[in-house]
Amino acid sequence: MPKPCQNCQKNPATVHLTEIQDNRMTELHLCQACAEEKGLASVPATPKFSIGELLANMVDGMSTTEEERVGPVQCPSCGMHYSTFRETGRLGCADCYEAFGAKLKPLLRRIHGSTRHVGKLPAHDGAVVTPQRQVQRLHDELQRAVEREEFERAAEIRDRIKTLEREARA
Amino acid sequence: MDLEQLTREASPWLDASGPHSDLVLSTRVRLARNLVGVPFTHRARDEQLVSVLGAVERAAEGAAAFQRGGLLKMHELTPIDRQFLVERHLVSHELSDGARPRGLYVATGERLSIMVNEEDHLRLQALCSGFQLAEAWALAEHADEELEGALEYAFSDELGYLTACPTNVGTGMRASVLIHLPALVLTKQIDKVLKSIVQVGLAVRGLYGEGSQVMGNLFQISNQTTLGHSEQESVESLDRVSRQILDYEERARDVLMRDAKGQIEDKVWRAYGSLRYGRSMTSEEVINLCSAIRLGVALGFAGLPPLKALNELLVLTQPAHLTRRAGRELDAPERNVLRADLVRSHLERANYETGEGSRG
Image (cartoon, rainbow over all chains, first blue to last red; front, side, top):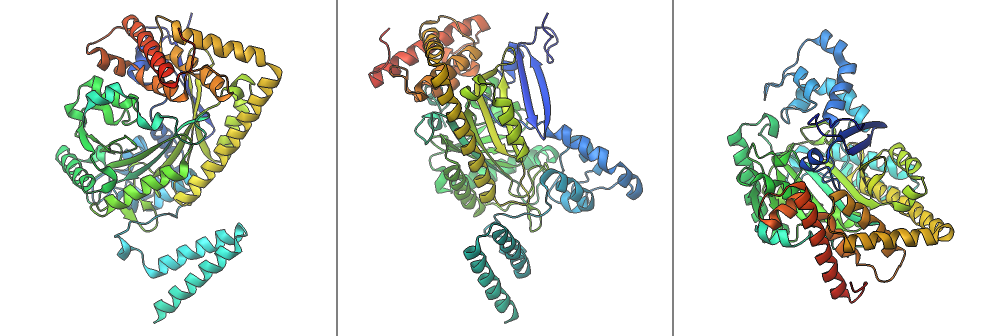
């Protein structure tokens, strides 16, 4: 006798979805009708990250003591409580990153292995990126280039850093 | 934007024109962006979401990348139409709930689109045929830059593009390839390969049907992290790993053809017979039969339908596509008969157009 569908609990489950993420395997057992309704009875439509829950668990296990120590934290812009983020895995607004900064850092490190953006910048947001920051970025790039033994590229980056530093002094 | 027209045609990016189309169905790059000053979608009020819809619509109308595109408002569509867009890979389940002001801005050709008010205000996505990571990234980046001229994104110097979920913060980029690995499944090497993909920091998803067999032998591989690596680096590492997997798959195919040629031929041609002459079929059956035939095409068997027709069937035979085509609600047995009809006529047309295939 097959297991009942996890969604409707009525029909036998015939569609079995397995996801592997972060070395964890999650399984979903549905009947054909429920699977079709959820769009799972065929090619996966879009990456469906059930990560919210996973994330909430991760944060939970990690920062309970911290929350006890610091007390509840609320985002001044949107009013979101840190505890709500822990439940849902979603932040309320862009300012939450600032408000929950200290608590988010270890989480970001665990998810991404890094806490600093390396990548494109908004085109018309130049004011936010200070020359010092730009130099810092180039230093990071330089280090990576050296690690990869891309010495020509490293030389180019070093030249750009020198130019920027000269400009900053002028 | 005309849904009627979309019903008749499969997604253009599934046309099998891209490189390695016998192994990779499609490549996708999506970028998550949010507007400054508006809470993330789940915390925003409906009127704020309406204004986001308006701002994105105006920005996309002014962008050359989205020429002759249009906005579809989810709350104005029927559930079947929303599901129809999900089946076309244009809309996620979250976007398709119809409960809040959400939308899809889609450019002609469906290669570029923006989900508006999904988890993030904007989910810009570029879809390309076959294995084209660099091209998909270029397409997305160019569109992103054009939109940026008209929209101010939430961005922090330290953390990059700010997103509702911390798993996307930074580049906000998720690049993925939908890849067909029947030989690795048949030779039972797939688990090992999937584990190694996860070990190098990428995510992989397979779709399982009845029993433990992967449906259609299709897997989606994507980058997992968005902080600490540039978009370019993430795309390159996904490209590198994908190529390696394609190489494993090709080697497994060589082994199969060396050791079990007769069985493979039999499997492929039986699948073709069922698909070509069956009178009632489930989605899963179509997906699995197409997978076997796709393997045959890739191995160079003459007389099979072109890859384009097989790709198209994966989309056209899904439930909401069939319902729209029929113009009325269908129950499952009815749908299975209509599905088989559509498959037959589609294959007949493909054979006629290419002058190949068995004349049945």
